[in-house]
Length: 177
Image (cartoon, rainbow, N blue to C red):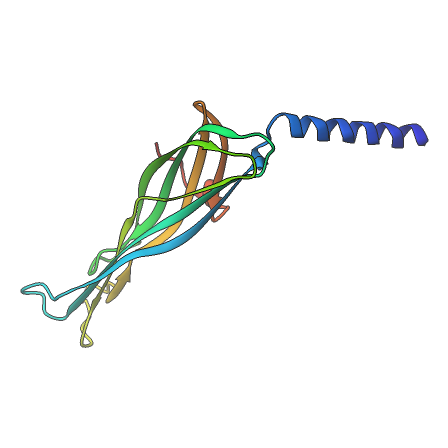
C-alpha cells in the first residue's frame, strides 16, 4: 500500500514539473467584454413613413494576461465575431453572419497583460410604428444580436490556445479564416 502512495506522489510531482516547463495553454488567460462603441437613430427614410431604425456599433475589448513565468512573444490573435441579422418585413429565421479580424502582439512579459479592441460590428434595430403590421405575418420589430466571439492565439505560426464566449460556441459554429 505504501509503494502505491509513494509512486502516485512521485508521478504527481513529475506531471506538475512537466506542466510548468512546457508553457501550458493555461499560462495565457483570455477575457472579453462586449461593449457598445456608437449609437445612431436614423430619421424616417423618404417614402417609408411609419418605420424606425436605430444602428449601433458593438465590439469586444479583449485582454490577454500572461500568467506564466516566461515572456510570450510573436503572438497573432485571430478572432471571429458571430452575430445574427434580421430584415424588417421578411418572414423567417435570422441570418447568421460573421466578422473576422486579427491583432498582433509582439511581447507579453511574465505576469503582464495587454488589451485591444476588436473591429466593430454594425447592428440595427428596425420597427414599424403606430400599430402597423405586415400582412405576411413577419415581425413588426427586429433586432440584430451578437452571438459570441471565438479567439485563436498563434505563436510563431502554430496554434497556442483558443477561447470562445460563450464556451459552447465552438460546438455550434465553424471557424472562419
